Length: 133
Image 1 (spheres, rainbow, N blue to C red):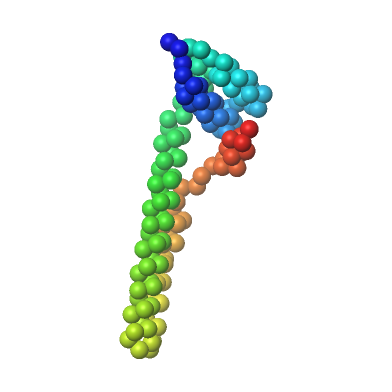
Image 2 (image 1 turned 45 degrees about the vertical axis):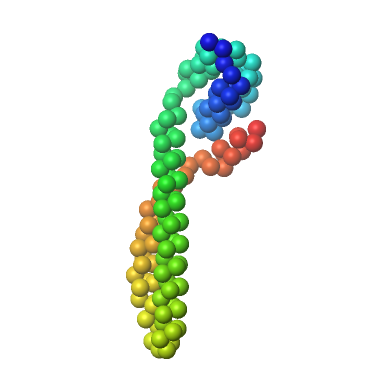
């Protein structure tokens, strides 16, 4: 079956991911990209990645990391909004003892713990360098 330009582009993206993971050196990557862009059938494209492992698990892990980062960002925004509200209430009620420090510290410890539990990304700079090739 003949391939479309979009299928060739997806094959090049998969090759780029493998190169970023260190499975292909620069010369082999360039050679396979040239072959992918010249491919006319699905079998030609399949042959390019037949000796490489599936990237499905890696993509799933990347989605999980991104979801965890978004969750932390939302947690941080809510923390800032609530702490701002508490300081405003403190200011409107006479500005005596600064009691908002206690909820800020308590919740802040939880926020720091959330940040520390985020999964670490790997190979980011190498991946960006190969993506520019």
